Amino acid sequence: MPRFFFHTKDGKTVPDETGVELADVQEARLQAARLIGELMREDAAEFWRSEALSLSVTDDAGLTLFTIMVSGVTSPAANSVRKQ
Image (cartoon, rainbow, N blue to C red; front, side, top):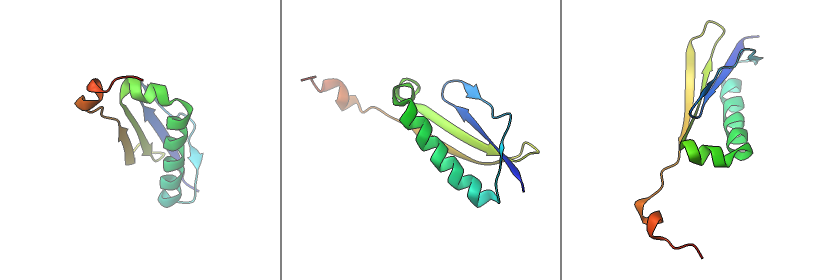
């Protein structure tokens, strides 16, 4: 069973040194989508401080198979909204 590594970056890079064995790339895609959702849920404030989060998945040879990138962009109109 192939091993996949899930490296994250949100202002700092966090390499996955261990990886996880999964059946195939499709399973790795599903795992990556779950993981990025968990990361955003666990520390939403950090996401907005860095305004970007990415998760790159590599195989055991270090080849990048795919990357998920999430970014938040604050509209200039938000600066004119008064806090109530």
